[in-house]
Picture (cartoon, rainbow, N blue to C red):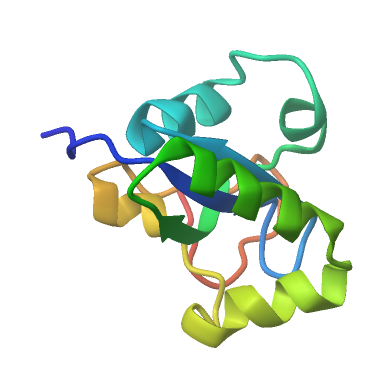
Length: 117
């Protein structure tokens, strides 16, 4: 069952300590599905960034957008520390939303939080 929509900032990663992407949405479930299906061309599709590793929720979209801009200004090390504060192994948090666990691409490495498929 799809969770109720709420404004949030999220961070996706290509894998454990991999490439990251910071985004904002009012429908996290639908947005993660879009990223996983490669609906949009761009950074996440090009680099296979699909694993949800961090989420912050907000009461309104304006606050979420301001936080997204703040997070994007930080360096990679700061973002890594933010992720690891609550998700040390970079587990795929989308599983908690009801999505299937990600599997490694053929010949790809499977990192923490990813089940081989």
